Image (cartoon, rainbow, N blue to C red; front, side, top):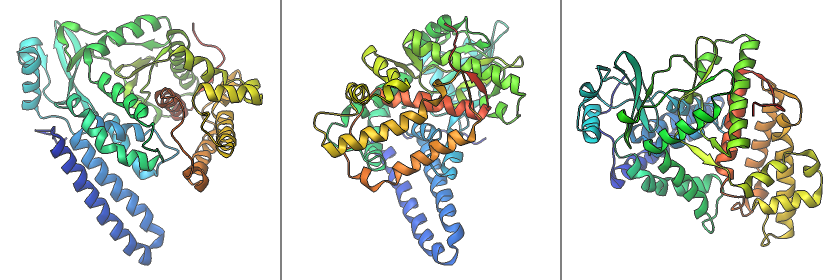
Length: 433
């Protein structure tokens, strides 16, 4: 695999890279307009493929929060063209890594030593690379270790990257400038936390100890003596990545066993710990030879405050969804409805969220739920398309909803997507407490 000898870290260099990408995209559209006349049946697919290629190539060279955006978008299977989903999915665990000399330089900066002065053996070539860091294999006193190294400049460029991305995101999601700061601040805070590997070790240890009783679930051990703010060392865990495992079409009993472990893991975090691993994408999970689930990354942890938790999960109850007074009160508590809304906005968003919640809460309504149910996910896709194309919605003020929705909704969408890929049948009413 190709390697990278440097990463643009200054605001000017990163902005220049994104601007040059915009020029390429403009060229793709000019080409599209020509093709639409001669080959209308393939023109749109070619445009999506070309744009996805150019955007991903730009983001993977920038890494950090820019590439993290692609990783988050790759989970939106129901809302993005397939070309983008496939290309952005590469950001989950396969992007060009840092070159060996840059790895050694990073180690000397944080430890004052080269990797071979700390470990008995150290592979300078990355085993895999993702949005914020890359992983190397090492051995110390006979124990195999995974050493994750953060890319240079990632933490320092988060604010400037988001400033560059913000206008694009506001246009895509119809976000008004007024009162939008809380949403972007939430994303910036979480991305900043993900670059603090000392915090990640603390989160990893706490959650692993709290969840060790859950059947068929494993965690690596972490080694603070070989870790720092930008380097984290843990046990090497052998297994298949989630996506690779799902492609093997596992036996249904095995799929159900792993799916139940994942479901129990998330429900215990949400309902008992009131904090959750809010980055449920395939690159963060392995399956070992005994069909155990292994969770390997705890950089993104979202705490769930009580004043959000209570109304959020009360809306999962059918009797509350179907009681107009209670439903309205909960939407106000969750900041979906405000006292500034017009009557038309109140009616519109009440109907919108009742329709969304009636569908999204279905897995919680029965004793078991079959996540291989294509009809359920087709309905999700259709609902997303319906409101994405709703001209009336574009006229509305979309600055609504608690900031906590961003990562909690992302958690559940990601969880549902993983279970769908696995085609697991899960006991959703019971979980290990």
